[in-house]
Length: 336
Image 1 (tube, rainbow, N blue to C red):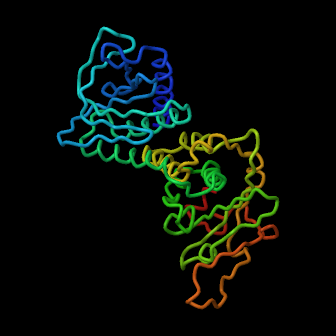
Image 2: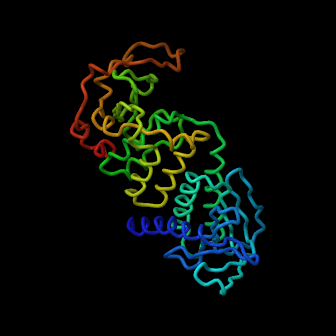
Image 3: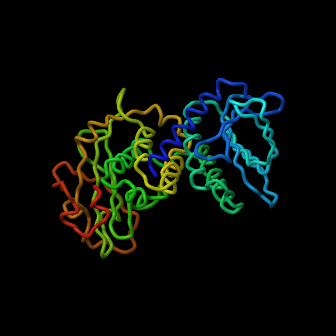
């Protein structure tokens, strides 16, 4: 399944590059190509040289078109298409047309990757319900490009680093937070992982009191990483591509890009320009059991006092090489 997914993703990029060298719109026909292995859905190019997807579907309800800053969606549109390798063969049919509205390479690459995941999810002949649901998720995702960032690029990079290094990235991705306001970065309903990063030499991290105060039946570990910008290294999008190739379902791959987009917001462009020292991160990656971390745990804090935050220096704290040895029943810790 992963090989097929990677083949489809690579094919879309290659096909679009070929389309970019052809005439985009002649005689009111868009130049298109098939998207292997699909025979129904097509990829095309707009007159501005931007990618377009033509999704074959039957929509009986009247659905309003969508026009965002970076993407437009036209439902049930009659289209005239011609194949790049057979210009005399004109196709006339109804399609849902998804068009990117920028030619910036970073956005083009991201758009192709995301729609590739959507096509994998909907299959060859999606029902109206399935198609509209997935298109809405795509619309919600692209709306987030205009929202303010919810976390720093450094913080998101550190979380992706932990997923990328995991023995089972799919389980960690499944346990990954869906909101930046969640107390923990990873939570499988039993155990929790909180990721902390620093660009300094010491391990001083900022905690909320709740992050160091486990509920009954839960265990918590802290993943601490030194994350330093460098001229070369890996970006958020390098880590995304590495993780995506290891995830076993299109739902998880969509969640990956969804959380990244939601978190970055208007910082999306900057994430391509920020390289972090991957080797240093590997060398300084440590796991700490919260029981070995100085905290206010067990202190008699009045109930009226809330929202407690403080800095804690982990430089002298004892790290653990394998938290699953201490907690052998933990599925979450087994992947670290």
